Every structure is written in structure tokens, then in C-alpha cells.
Length: 155
Image (cartoon, rainbow, N blue to C red; front, side):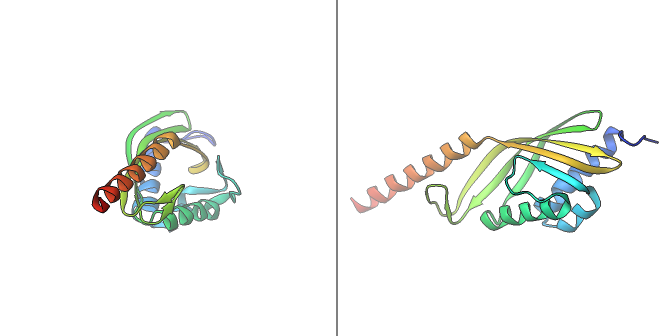
């Protein structure tokens, strides 16, 4: 199917996005980003973000450093013109100190949604939103459970 400079078909955008997320996050193949992320790509909501594929790679490297076993699951994709909305969750396995305490080997599922905008076959913009409150509550609950368990053992 032919497309003008600003429109691609839904199937192609969906396929590219799923491939990008699965390959770059779940399989750690960051090279795929060079094929899908445009040089002018911007990611809204991230401080000190460099534009383009290298900026997105840097962001993922930071995420992988903090959560080496992170994965992403896609639950729903919706699209209007060149704007794709992805709804899913991140699965995080935490090993080190995170936010307010030391929580070894806990698994967290964090809901998220993000928007991806495409132009001429490349992704030009992303804006992601996480359920930060849910993440903090889960971390705090695990900390409390750990303290209670340690107290019970010590008693």
C-alpha cells in the first residue's frame, strides 16, 4: 500500500512497534532501533534525553542497569492516523536498592501506556506513562512484609 509523507498503514505501524519493543526490550537487541527510530526522534517525559536512536538506547541501558531482567508485555494497541497507543505492563525483578530501601529479588508488574508517532516509516516521538503510585505502593508493601518476616524470625 502506498502512503504519503505522513501516513502509514495501521498494520505496518503496529508490526514495527511490536517488533521494536520485543526486540529492544525483551531480547536486548538495541541495533533494531537504528532501523525504526528516526534521527529526530524525541522522547517526552525523560530528563536529559538525547534525540534519536542513541538517546533511546541510552534510556534503555539505564533501565537495564537498574532492572537487568525487565520485560514488557503488550495488552492492547490502538491507532488513529500515525499515532499508536500501546497499553501493557513492565515486569521488573529488583535486586538492589530502589527508591527507599533494599528489596532483594522481588517481582513487580507495573502498568503503563505510551504514545508512538510515526512519519515516513520511522518513529519520531514517544511519550510514556507509568503507574508510579502503584509501583511505590508495591515497593512499600514488600518492604513492610520483609520487616515483619524478619521481626517474626527474630522473636
